[in-house]
Image (tube, rainbow, N blue to C red; front, top):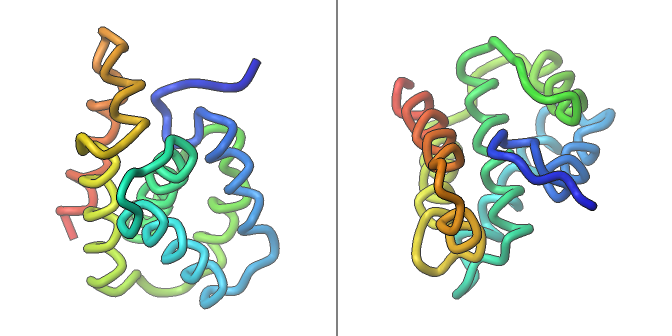
Length: 137
């Protein structure tokens, strides 16, 4: 059985994606983030795996902005990457993260459908938290 939780790295797709940051330099890591946001915003329908990765990527951008990384045990590679990176992401990256979050929460998102069936609202609260931190920039 796979992992399934409201935390940005609390699912198998995001945890697997996190490993992509192993040993990357700043530029390569930013490309990984851009690809994650592109997958969520360019498709007609956002599959659950792409949505989960976009949410995790948005959390990584928050860490770049805030500099205080804390996360699930499966996020050690992106946390280490953010600590190696000097400088904040450009406003376009922040906008891309916010756009991907909106798309993941939309009617054209499998993840939104799946979490809509949950009654506790924890996932929506988590995405609201991430978006609020992205807007503080």
